[in-house]
Image (cartoon, helix red, strand yellow):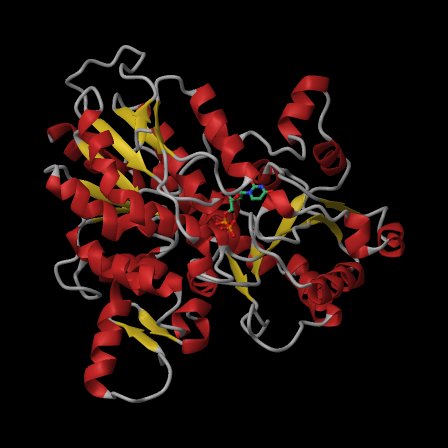
Length: 492
Ligand code: UDP
């Protein structure tokens, strides 16, 4: 069986063969795919051919739905199927399914050259995901093609990724034998407390950590890094990266955010589409019908992204907190990392008694919701979030303040960035995965209530949203970064 297939050799549409042709090589996970899809659709509207390396089956149902929706909505975007080499998962017991997929992709990356070289019209540039950077950049270089990385998290996190290998090298020289990773003092950015580092980084043998270090070192070989942020949100980190304070000679950093949603993001998983259901019945879906009945800015939206599973004990405290807050709430419940495995019913998790007590002011749902549309809804006044970067950027664009409760990975760094950028407040003392202690319902209730009543927090979030709009408007910082990148693409 061939390692890969070009699904269609000629790109339908009116672009001529002389136009730039970018091969996108995304990785896995909705937080990685959605910004890719948003960027691809933005770029394809600038007379650039776009091809997308597509690995099926995906890890989650949501990814499969969104790939299908992208190609259905944009027939001019070329789909390039890729068959992964098998990976023996038993060599990584207990590993996160998304990290495993990244590893499988990394180990198959040497096969990408056939696909890139075989595409028509001739590929003129490659854009890849950071999880694959150390394996894809050399492939592109060998084909003498420029390679950019689309970084899907904050510029603050980018600075950690770039500096972490240097931190380890220095640590080995300075204090060999000292236990632990220690705080990471990123030059020109800030000191990151050991406790805020992604959990996996405390173990240098962890699969994620090995990938992180390799990718961090490889970034300097990229031709540029595109980041879904904007200058006014993360001025310090962006300046330090661009001035070479973090890593001397670092490639150009293009802050091109906040990326706008693409029509393909309006889709669903097997659990049922909000929009699809609404379109089919020409009446609002239950969630939007419910939101439509709530007063302006009265609802706390509670969601922890596409893959964060919170312990049952903590979920019960969250339920108690939302009840105690006295606020209206819309809660998207997820109990497993991969959506296909999430079979528990809301009532099994939270109990009929709780649901009965809050039925007049709370809605709990499972499955995929149209988060951006929820955040844009006039009824939503606060977002209790895990501070995944996409959730942060979506809330910041809408001016909905975040009450950030990081759980995992880069989320504490994102929380640092969002708080200093005015997009919300970080519950710094609230525990995350791997730390002892459950945050009590009483404390959650008090903080939710206080944040909902905090006019200053709301005003800062509204300002951040205005800055976000200015950045992408003609002449804004992100608009100019995008133009600069497109100009370079067309010159290659
Ligand atoms: N998302 C959504 N509906 C859901 C769950 C997630 O639209 O039910 C989207 C969300 O809007 C965001 C992305 O999936 O764009 C999740 O990315 P994020 O970086 O916030 O968190 P992660 O899923 O990586 O934890």
